[in-house]
Length: 118
Length: 142
Image (cartoon, rainbow over all chains, first blue to last red; front, side, top):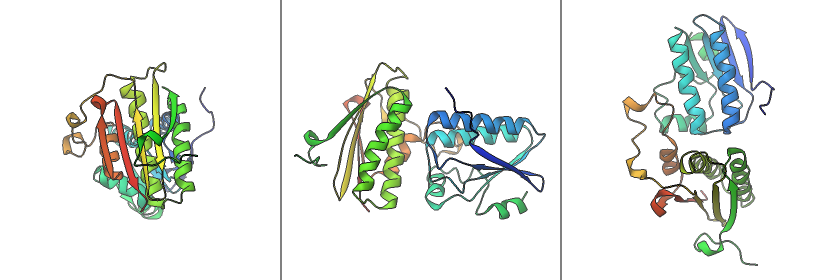
């Protein structure tokens, strides 16, 4: 039985949809699937979305979460949108670096910096 | 009482879980709780949490093929200096050396295939045994 509580807090700022993860640990398959569904619905709800993922609350994530982000990146690109990531803690950023996904994603140190770059 | 000793697998604590990810998560929390109680550093705790999550998920999804009737067995020992973990599935095994390099440019946008690399990067020792049905991992407290 899935949890109906949203796993993201979404706000609109200067034409950008800012989605902040509410989970500290993006590890469990069920949670990842729910996040994926929420984000997919958000992308589908707008033409050429400008989407910023705010990782300030995220302390742990798994390779399955990375896979979810990769699929989201493709969905955004296919709809002519733009995706940026921000506020990634050093330990989490290291995971992106080790997997070279820091080359795939547009990562900014802060939401303010990312918003200015859209 | 015999304490679990990372150098003696016969003393390892044992947790067997059915092949579902929720049970696997609970088992991982048991191990991580003990690591935190042993006052491992934040980097070591992060590494162990990540590697253990990857190992258990791989055992359940790939090793046991998602078959909930198959068990995943986790054996572990935590000392102030080291944490050793063995995760075993009931599958047919595989060749971990045949897994493609996920950091190759042509594989970067694939949404899978990073678990083994992450375990090997974050743990100080990783060894596959028993035709790939068992993984031994060790991380020092630093």
